Length: 136
Figure (tube, helix red, strand yellow):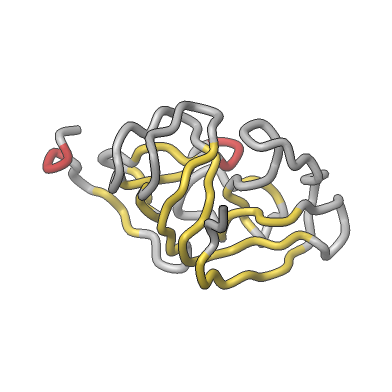
């Protein structure tokens, strides 16, 4: 099943070994910071989602920064159109007040450690000052 749809991709140099392609626990489909060459720790510093593995010190990793993409959930995402942010080790989580929003889920519900589908734009994250309108 094709999931990617008109995504923009870029290459970067990995600072650490990002070669594991095991969905859910490996590096693939997690948010990265291309400037540091490692996993992103929040939505503000995330550059995109890792799409091809990357060996430490080489310029062979590819990330996508905008479009319809897969992501690895770090917490349950229980409904479509849930706003998403990034947390430790590049996992996507539901956004809340005080989080940097980088996208929203569009596919089926996912559990923590599962791979989901979302629309993302890492070039223009926005800060969720108050998410009470989301029920959070």
